[in-house]
Length: 165
Image (cartoon, rainbow, N blue to C red; front, side, top):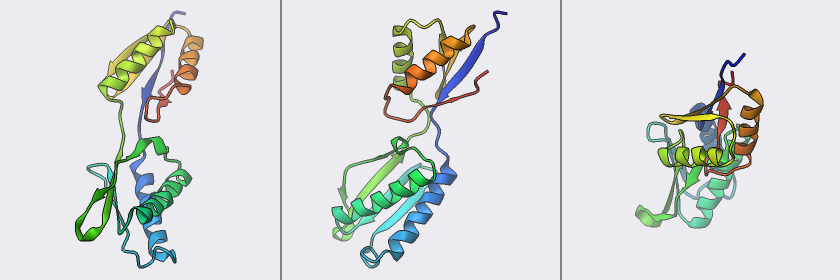
């Protein structure tokens, strides 16, 4: 009866949905009346997991980012996984904003999550396995409590709870 139950805490992003959202945003930027001839562009680099927005001004870049974010939300991508950097000056008097797509839980965040779970004194074991955490316990109720606790916390990136067994 004392069989271990477990689940994994991960942070993943469906890159195909991000690609689809970027394609839709590009179409809207090209067709939208106020942005049609502005010279704004949007590029996704799947290998580097970055999105680059280039525009003639900060205001236009903000408009393009708003369009992109609305498309990401419609496609079910959590906006916490896409973090935009500050505006940089680019060639030809344009502005560039680069966004990083956060995937996987880094060591520091995993340690913080582990510490927070232990501070709550749940009867669970937490193991850091690469870019995910495995939480195990003989009690399913304890695992449910950990999931609800983690949902109430903010670690700067979206967390998913998978492989619940």
